[in-house]
Length: 312
Image (cartoon, rainbow, N blue to C red; front, side):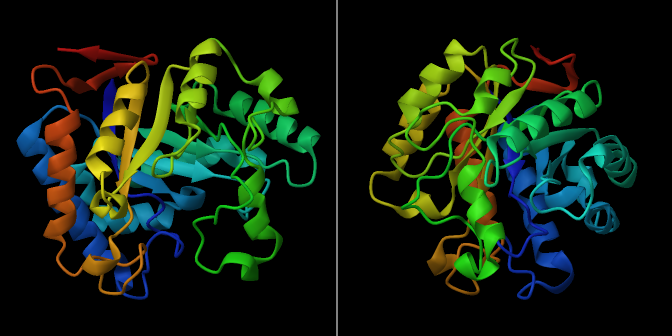
């Protein structure tokens, strides 16, 4: 079941939105408004989440408030990786969530929290247990990032690649499972009561999809955040792949992220570029809503309580 649509991913991160092409994020804010409007024309009750804000950046959220973006979304997604990338300590999680709620005026979902095993699997286990304890009771959605390590042959979605040094390679060690599917130490400590979700991106025609579903169902996972790539929508057989992915993930309550600009539609030919015509992203969001959001029932954004989605 699709429980929410998430508009973009880490727009305040140069690896996901080229703000050099959009000083002040004015294009981004307008794009979100247009996409939200298009989704609401299809289904006025599906919850809309402002795409996960890197490092819980409340200054960025205040900027979005000043542009009126919060009138178009129901929740704010935040991301945090204090053991790997962020310039704050893990014990700051409660303060960060509270500040994000105050800055945005919206309930916060933690759509990515994680810790890599780059240096030690024991460090990742500590990060998992400590993060979940700190976040307990603060928000209705917590998505651990991620289920799988990134396969070594695949590139990480960062702008400067290996030039980022060890920061780049940490992307490859964030899973509960290694890239071959074997469990790491942290897998033993992931809650199996359905209270904690996962964030797992599936690449185009990802060979891990069915195994991921099997693992998640065996371990009691109820909530999943994943995405459909706007850029991938122009590949041959894209709709067939999207349909297969969404059908496979039907057992879970899915927060579906829409992002990544098709190269031929960007101001610059790169997935981080703002589109030349902002309405083109809105039309992709409308297409997704038409195809995957139920018409007859929609999750009431005011009734997502205590980890449940109550439908009308």
